[in-house]
Length: 277
Ligand SMILES: NC(=O)c1ccc[n+]([C@@H]2O[C@H](COP(=O)([O-])OP(=O)(O)OC[C@H]3O[C@@H](n4cnc5c(N)ncnc54)[C@H](O)[C@@H]3O)[C@@H](O)[C@H]2O)c1
Image 1 (tube, rainbow, N blue to C red):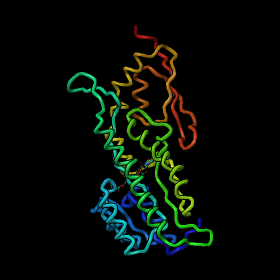
Image 2: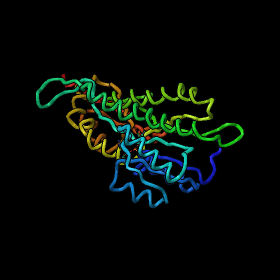
Image 3: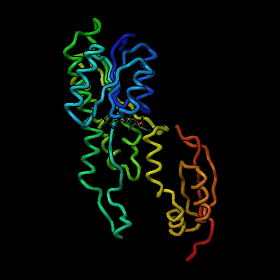
Image 4: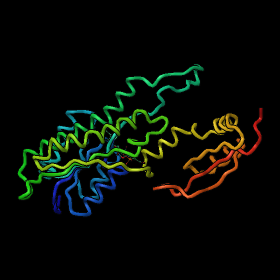
C-alpha cells in the first residue's frame, strides 16, 4: 500500500523508544503525525520537534482513546496509518520466591489481567477504533485501499523468557489478533500487521534490567555451579563482566563464541572444577 506524503498517521507510545523513532521516521517522510502517549512531560516537546500533534491518551482507557482519535482526526484528518507501540504490563514468575516470607508466592490473576489489558486488549482497542475510522472513509485509490495498522508484538511472543509469562503470552496474543482481524478488514482495504522486534535499548528495556538484577547475582550463579556436575555446559547471550566474573567464581571456565541472529556474542561456560561433594 502506497501512503503518500501528507497522509495522517497515529503513533501510540510516540514519546519514547520505538514509538518515537517511528514518529520521527514518518514525519521525515512527510506524514502528519499525532502521538498518543501518557507522558505529558516529554510527549508534547517530542511532538513539536517533528511538527506533529501530542494527544494525551491512555491506551487502557476507552474514552481516552476515543477522545484521542477525535482530536487527531480534527487536526489532521482521518489517519491512514496507525502504528501501535505503547504498552503497559507487569513482570514476574508464575511462582516466585518470596524472600520476606520465606515461601513461594503466585503471580496474581490481577497482575496478569493488568498486562492483558495493557498489551492485548489495548491493541484491539487501538486497532479497531482506527479501522472503524478508515472503513467509514473513502478509499485512497482504485484498488479500494483505505489504510494500514501496525501492532507491536515482540520476540517474546515466540520465545518468552523466565519472568515473562504475562508479556510473552500477551504479545503472542497480539500476533494472534493479526490474521483474523486482517481477514475481517480485507474487504475494506485495511491492512493489519505486527512486528516482532528483538531487544533494543529504550527506557523500557533499560529500566527492566535494573528491576531484574537478581538474575545475575553471584549467589545465584554460585548455586548453579554447586548444582552442576563437572563438565556441565551452560550458555548465555550475556557477556557482561559481572556475569563472566560470577560464572568463573562459580567454577566455570568460559569461552566467547559468535552469537546467532541479532546477538553478536555468546558465552559458553564449562564447569571445570571438581564437584565440591
Ligand atoms: N525495547 C525492546 O527491547 C523491545 C523488544 C521487543 C518489543 N518491544 C515493544 O516495543 C514497544 C515499545 O517499547 P519501547 O521499548 O520503545 O518502550 P518505551 O518505554 O521506550 O516507550 C513506551 C512508550 O509508551 C508510553 N506508554 C506507556 N503506557 C502507556 C499508556 N497506558 N497509554 C499510552 N502510552 C503509554 C510511555 O509513556 C512511553 O512513551 C512495546 O510494545 C514493547 O513491548 C520492545
